[in-house]
Amino acid sequence: MIVFAHPMSAKPVRRTPARRHRQIARVQDALDQLRLEHEMILRLLRDFDRARLDSSCRPAAKAEIVEQLCDILSLHAQLKDQVLYPAARRLSIHLPQAQTAFCDHKQLHALIAELDEMEPQDPDYDETVAELGDCVVPSLKAEQAYLFPELRAAGLDTHALGAEMARMRRAQQKHDFTRVGLPRARPGSSGNATAWPPACRLSLS
Image 1 (cartoon, rainbow, N blue to C red):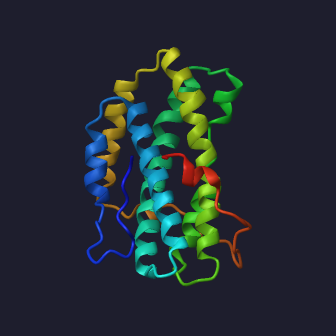
Image 2: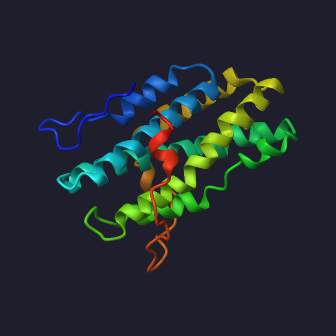
């Protein structure tokens, strides 16, 4: 069971992204590194879901969760685009379900850029975070269910990729992931999500 700090606690537990990245970087296997990040992403989505449902939650508490979520998603997408996906394509993966796990991160980057320009009090803030969850949760599930097992079966050198990812993590820790290489938020966009995706609440239960 995962225990979450209440968002309105007097002394909230402040997670340190740099420390988490260092811990993940010590894991030698690339797919295990990404799996641990998946768990962190889902946990932050659940944290935000709890915070948004708490009418007494301070806006700053929600903003802190979203900042951490955007940081890890930005780095996660970079690692997949620059390390995992090129290596996977070289193996000529043919399993249809594995192919669908390859994610185009343009929408993800656009949503992160929108959130970077918004305040937690904005009327579309929660809907934009929900849209972000809708964007990422299905791909995380597809990767773990189909792509990762297929890559292991195909003989991917996950330790070599893990070392490369660890180097990238260490190199990127001093940068602001949410502002590097992201597009500008689409004008007048408010997102069309109408409900928080159930997977975001239930994946870690």
